Image (cartoon, rainbow, N blue to C red; front, side):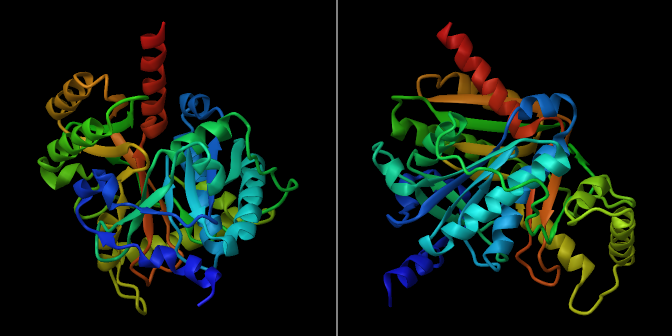
Length: 385
């Protein structure tokens, strides 16, 4: 087996873990091969876009990075994480060129179609390790259908900060360039909180803090959430509501290449067919609506670890208060941001509805992760003033 083959097989060899709390342990993560590359995408001025109530567009831009790269790689698995207003990932040397082209095209698309500036970059892992940091990966299986990547080592957080400074930038492709966004949509309606509120949680280690204390803190937070109904999962057990025309009609129209007056009509037609099939519940070939909806709930990406803990949970105000008190008591260990809202939303990537590994990215419907990040930054500024 060649070195390239070894590198390509790396991610498949990482064991899938079922217990989310166990992923707070850095010892459960495996170091990426030395020749891999880290990719980062970030919506510039996402706070302003969210203030303009463009939540869905911001999420669509972040999810588009993952869709474009997955399609560019022919569906091969690679580690990635959705951050609400962006995404991060890692690719082998074989795929670095395809990743560069997909990032450049997605940045051009986001600007031309969504009116959002998507900052994209590729960082050699060696550059991160020269900082005394690392990127290690684990795989979390929320169900038997698929797994999501989790990251530790401090390198991903450093890469995100470097990208914001303008380092390692990948220039956008020429205007009019189009990534392959097949399977990207947001057809389901927003889902209201069932237990009181939707809480966006972002917890990052404090500089110079004790890693063992940070692990204990995040384990405590996850334990508190897992003690609540459905471990805080924000999706209704029967799946989110589906209406026609969908709330995300205009955004899905933007995923189709080219112009033309009939593009909206095409999306109207295919979303109507989808709506009728889902409403009827009738099997169409190998597609079973009830099975698909169950998998949507099981596959929902509502909590993750990428150098810090991120969650979108449905909880009572009392639990939110408990979490906030626990975090406030650990200021020497962690920096955090919380954002309370009354609904969550979902962006879907379903390359093949007949397969069980479709992915569904959850964020808050009134700010979500980006608003929690803003709260974290405000708290840091206040502490330094």
